[in-house]
Length: 355
Picture (cartoon, helix red, strand yellow):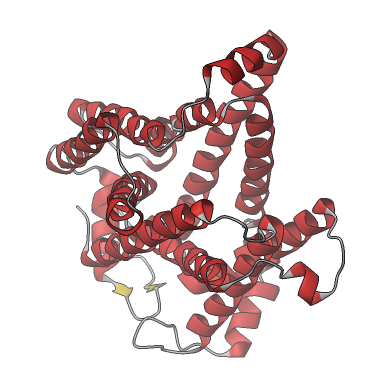
C-alpha cells in the first residue's frame, strides 16, 4: 500500500525528472554554445543538496522541514560517527557507478549501453525481494519485464541512427575484449546503482530509537559525496581555478538543471523512504516518456513508431504493477510506521516493539 506521502513524493519526482529530461534535450540541441564542465556541475549539485538538507533540517519551511537545532544536527552527524559512516557506502557505490558508465561508453555504442543499463530495473526488484522482504506477484514480475522492454524502446527511439559506414568501421575496430569490457562495465554500473539505492532504503526505513530525520541522512550522505565530487573535478584537470573559467557555459539553462538535480536528489530520498526503489524506477521511466512528449511540443521532436509502442508498454506495465500487488510483511510495517511519522520533519516516532 502506497501512502499519501509517497504519492506526493512520486508526483514531485515525476515533475522534476520530466523537466530535467526536457531541459537536457534542449541543451543537446543547442549549437555553438560553450559546454559546461560536467564534473563542476556535479560538484555544484552536491553542494546545493547539502545546503538544502541543512536548511530543511533547521527550519520548518512550509511544514516539510524538521525545525531542529544546530546542536542536534551536530550531535546526529558528528557524535554518532558509526551511524554517519554507514552513508559512505552508497556514496562510494554511486561514485564507482559513474566511473563505470564512462568506461562502458568508451567501449560501447551509446544505444548498446542504454539497453544494457536498463538491467537495473530488474536488479532493483530482485534486491528488494532479497534484502527488504518485498513480495511480488507473477503479474508484477511480468510488469517489470514489460517496463524494461518499454524503456529500452523509448530510449532507442530517442537515439540517432549511426550511419552504416561508420557502424561498419566501428564493428571492425571493436574486438571481443573491448565489447566484453563495455558490457561488464554497463552491467556493473547497473548493479551498483541498484545496490546503492537498496542500501539507502534499508537505512532510512530501519526501525531505530531516536532515528535521524531524512534531511539529516542527506547531510550525512553529503559529507562523503562532496569530497568525491571535488575529486572528480581534480581528476578532470580544470584549465584554471579562476571561477570565470570553471563556470564557463553555466547559463540559465544549465543552472536550472543543477537546481533540478539537487532538489531531485532530495525528492528521490523521500520516495525511497516513504515508497520504494521499484516505484522510483517506474516514476523515472514514465518521466522519460512524458519528457519526450514535451519535446514534441516544445522542440518539434518527431518520435518514431517505436516510441509509441514503447510508451504504451510503460503505461501498461505501471497499471499492471499497481493493480496486481499484495501486501508483504515489510509493506504492512511501513504502513503502520507512516501513521506515526511526523511528516513535517521526516522523523519517525520510536517503533513499538513487536511480539
